[in-house]
Each structure stands twice: as structure tokens, then as C-alpha cells.
Image 1 (cartoon, each protein chain N blue to C red):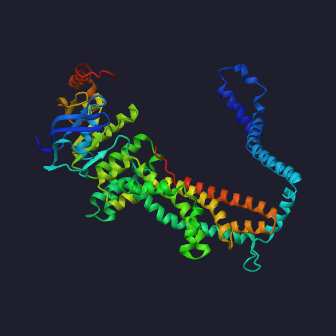
Image 2: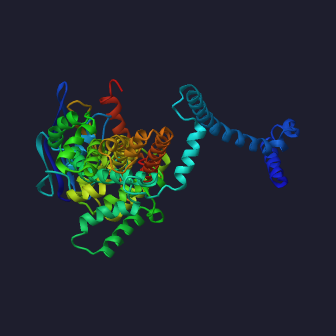
Image 3: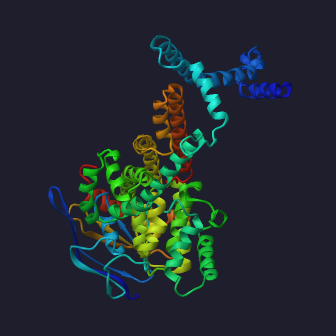
Length: 264
Length: 295
């Protein structure tokens, strides 16, 4: 087992609301090792996105500490790239320019323009978006926007890639093809990934570990499942494998029997 | 025509193959003609109401001129307008210039006052939108000053600049600046959090946050502010020029009142309206070009 890249120690998050304090998360302890893919899964409102924002540094915890590569996470930074749920491409920049903005920010001090452009083109090539790189985001489909969002994040060569329900806004078929793409890109780059999802199949298909969260308020980690399926994975093969069914059943059991959302 | 009809009928045949009874409908070949009629009707629908409204306006005007006596009727006014616009740029000494010069000098004042207002108002709006302290500091002042008629500032302008012309420009500056500040600030506040999160994850320096994210996101709001400002500025310039004199459409109106050329005053009203409409349409056109689709 490789060393932990991100350490989350006794983290809690409380928000001040009109009705007083709201405890979103408590007692979160988790190590994320280099090169592994971790899914955070739970019912809506369980604080999985809150936890991801904490790792991203977009919010700071009210208690406990988060470390990335031995240093405390004090704010967001390009070494922890984020793929946002709604792609968050800037509508006034082309797909190429959106990725280039990130590339320039990370490598601009060390590399010249031609090299940066090559990096950008390579990232778009990796997600098979070369044909549309000069289009504006509103000119391409939702799935293509998310591809560009993923290219932007990978192009930054982050230590860890954070994905907040990356395929949540897509239809089932587009989602499946993007999951396959993502698996290919992850295996090519050996990236460390933390992904928030509420899709059980997606979690089992893509993860090395599935972190299941209890219902909020005061949500915490309920159970962790190690998904011991060999890479590369193929969705068609997996469906027939009994292990896949077993992992799937474990997650479904946790979500729907032990932690059924009362008023959904 | 006949080829088109052929195509239509074959298409019709293909789609209604399931219902062969309707295939021999006599209405099918006549379809293109009725389509043309439809288009014609749509154009009529768009054109008739405004024309009707305009005719009504001129009719009422004619009626009033019949009764009132001192108000010239539309025909007289039209003749005066033709005479006036046959030589809009004559120069007959400094106090007798063509209507074209008067319009241009009014537009120039609006442009200068407005330009200064943009130069001050837009950066100020950015700061108000970005920093809460700034907005809490300046908002009460703006709320206090904004309802004041810009003409109340005219004496201050005369006092400071000692001349009529910059004083008129100064009132334009004052009336243009408020919508500019407020709309820019509102635009900055409404920049989607997602875009700002992108900026935070990338650790963009402040100047790049402004040029790459805030400015393009705020541009549509800014253009709304500019449009509102130009509208008010064009309203105010007429009044300001009546007070300051010199050359300008407002002064011209007052001058023609002193000459008792009422038909010229009516022409001026139309001219002011048309110029205002053109300014508005021009800015709407620009705004459309710079509005990004966000979905």
C-alpha cells in the first residue's frame, strides 16, 4: 500500500444558520492513498459535498485538520483540481481557452506558450474533444462540456482530483460513456481521485474504496467498502461477476436498509 | 411553382399513406398559395397596429390644432420640417445654427459627460460589488443623492466651472453615474459562485479574476447600466441646455419658443424622441452582441 496523500483527522463542520448552529459533519477520519479512487456516497444532505469542499479547501473545517502531502489545507489550490457538477466552464471562453486558462496558471511560469498550447491540446485529445476545441461551451452538448471540465482538471496534473457528482446532470447513456472515458484516463494517468456520487453502480465501477456516509445532520463515515476488482474494469464483464453484485449489495444494503432517509 | 407543388404533394402522400382516404384531398395543391397568404397576414398583423396608432396620434393632433388655434396642424409642421431639414447644417452667425449643429452639440455633451461617468462609475461599481466594506460605506450616500434631480447640481457646476458648457456636461455626468455604479455593482454581486470557485481553485491573481471572470460576467449588467444612463442623460440634456443656453437641441427649443415658432418646437419633440430611440436601439444591439449564453 502506498503512503496516504490526504489525511483527514477528526474533522467537523458547523454552519451558522438563522436557527442557530447546524452540525453538518462530525468526527471524519479518512486517509486517501496515492493512486486510489475513493467514492463518497450517501443520501442527499449527508454532507458528502461539504466533505469534498473541505478537501478542495473551498471551505475550512470548524474542527479537526486536513493534510495534503503533509501540509495543512488552508485554501484551494491547483494541486487539488476540482471537476464541478455543472461543468463550470466560462461561457465567454472557447473549450480550448477554458483549459488553457488552467494550464497557463499551473505551468505558465516554467514553460513557454507553444508548450502550454501542446499541453492544452493533449488534454482535450485525451477526452476526445479535439474536434470541438474552438467551440464555445453553449455550442456543445452537456456531456461534451463535462469532458472539457475533466480535461481542464487533468491538464493541471493535480496531486489529487476532486469530482463533485461529475456526471449527475447527464443522461444515463452519456454518463456510461463518460465513466468509461474516465476509467481510461485514470488508468493512463494513475491519478488519485475523490468522487462524490449518489449512483451505486458508478461507485462500484469506478472506485477502489467506497466511503458510505450516514444521514445528516451531524453526518459521519458509516462504513468503508474495499472494492477488490481488478483494473482495467469492463462494465459488461462486471455485471456478470458475483463480486460486483456482492459489492453493489453491500452499498445498497447500507443506503437503503441501515440508513434509509426518513422523509425523502 | 409547379416543382414545389409536386414536392409538396409527394410529401403529403408519403405522410398520409396510412390514411389513403385523405390522399385525394383537393386542398393539397393550393397549399403554397395559402402559405404566402399566411406570411402576408403576419406582416399585416405586425404593421397595422403601429400605423393605426400613429394615424390616431396625427388625427388627435389635427383635431386639437383645429380647436386650439395657436398649435400648428400636422401639414404645416411637416412643411416646416422639410424646410428645416433641407439645410440642417447652415451657419448664420454663432446664434443661428442649423438644427443638425444643435443635435450634434447636444450629443457631444452627452458623450463627454457620459464618458466621464463611465470612467468613474464602472470601476467604482466593481469595488462596491467586490468589497462589502466599500458598499456599506458608499450605499447610503448613493441612496441619498440618487433621487436628486440632476438639474439641482447645475448651479454647483456653474460655480465650479464658471462656464455654461462644462456645467451642462456636469449635470449629464451626475445623472449618468448612478445607474452605472448600481448596475455594475449588482452584476459583480451576481457573478455565479461556480465561476469564482474556478478562480479560487486555479488561484488566479486578482487582475486575472477581474479580466477573465468578473469583467465578462458583469458586461451585460454594465451595458444595462449604460443604456439606462444614456436614456436619462438624453432626458436631462434638453432641460440643462434650456437653462444654460448656447448651442444644443434644448436651447434651440427655448429659442424657438421665444420666436414663437411652435411648429419648430413640435419638430424638436419628434427629433428628440427619434434620437433617443436610436441611442436605445444602438445600445440594445451592442448588449445583444455581448450577452453570453450560460447554459
